[in-house]
Amino acid sequence: MSDAFLSQTITIGTEDGEIEAYAALVQDSAPRGAVVVIHHMPGYDEATKEITRHFGALGYNAVMPNLYHRVAPGAAPDDAAATARAQGGVPDEQLVGDVTAAAAYLRALPNSNGKVGSIGHCSGGRQSVLAGLSVDLDAVVDCYGAFVTGTVPEGFPLKVQPLGERVAELRCPVLGLFGNDDQYPSPEQVDEFQALLEKSGKTFEFHRYEGAGHAFFAVDRPSYRPEAAKDGWAKIGAFYAKYLGA
Image 1 (spheres, rainbow, N blue to C red):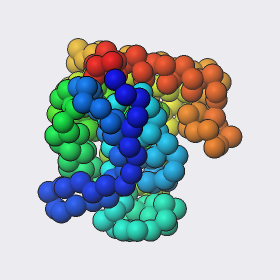
Image 2 (image 1 turned 90 degrees about the horizontal axis):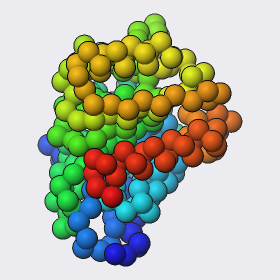
Image 3 (image 1 turned 90 degrees about the vertical axis):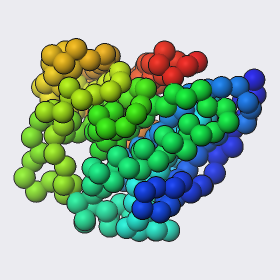
Image 4 (image 1 turned 120 degrees about the vertical axis):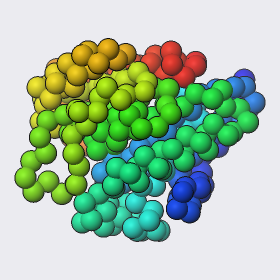
């Protein structure tokens, strides 16, 4: 097996046309799983492209759809994020369609083993769970996704609704990684999510980190917590190896 992968901008077909996406595709024929990377609220940026490349280095095919392509094609990540935020963010229906398109692209690759997971951080964490409710996926990773449960504060810029009432619809196992110093999601909101998963008999694995708050994976922010991030990446690797194939 080769450890080479090709990373580049591509287009993927959706129900309403085509959107830009970033891909890291392994360059050998051995069957392998794949990951849809859902970018965070700051957008289709270098940090999330690096996450996509990380999965290529781990041996997975990975694609990150540009969720802001329709509202700000070709714009810089900060500008595109501002435009999307001013419009209330990405509608849930659009997110589901874009993840469905990315998963179909990945399953059509000649070295696909047919298994696809998703991952997202912050707003992308909630959207990863949403994808697990609505898309044919094999594994979902939620990295401190806000408003899976809990109450959206008044004046919040994104038009989102909690997903708690839909947890019973979850189609695949979930890995959740959370900081105990986070406010959105707070430890109480994580507890609520866990209780709903247990009540519905879903397969899940939660890990919580002391001394870590929101965005503890973000290497370019003061919130970065190396020990939590290192352990989190190990947990992600083991989870995907179990459900997507090593």
